[in-house]
Length: 207
Figure 1 (cartoon, helix red, strand yellow):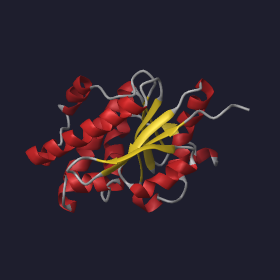
Figure 2: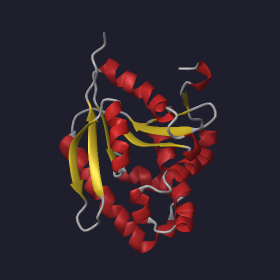
Figure 3: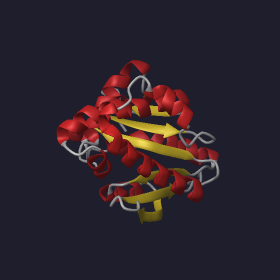
């Protein structure tokens, strides 16, 4: 890995830029196509929505990027790997995606309830949670995503802890499998037409 491209911690002053990057990265994601139909609508909704995720992760977890801010990876740590609703609400006051509307919020709630239940059922013990990772569209396929997850994967291995994530984009499954994650649950959100892959990476032994 070239040192100048090694992952760095995201700074608070970069939250807006990181949120906008994630918005671009997820513009064609199946979940967000469902939650906010239409490109123009997603362009409005995604940055403030990811702003909540980034701020939460900075406060309660860890956020990695590159020196050029080509990608962002948000992690939640062992003991706090499930986002707290009350803490999310407090952060949402300064960037709630009101453009989702009532129907969008109901859809969002259905998605969160389903994925949250899978998370609790399949992995109740201590673990790291890869909440979101995205790479600038023009830089995708260049190894940036793989680089961004390495710091926490290494720490998880050192601590003998698993890592967990969910994805609703089947195209992402092989990427995670390449880095040691295995599908532990696959299902469809009832009446929503969205498939969810829950994936687990067991700690790798330190040699």
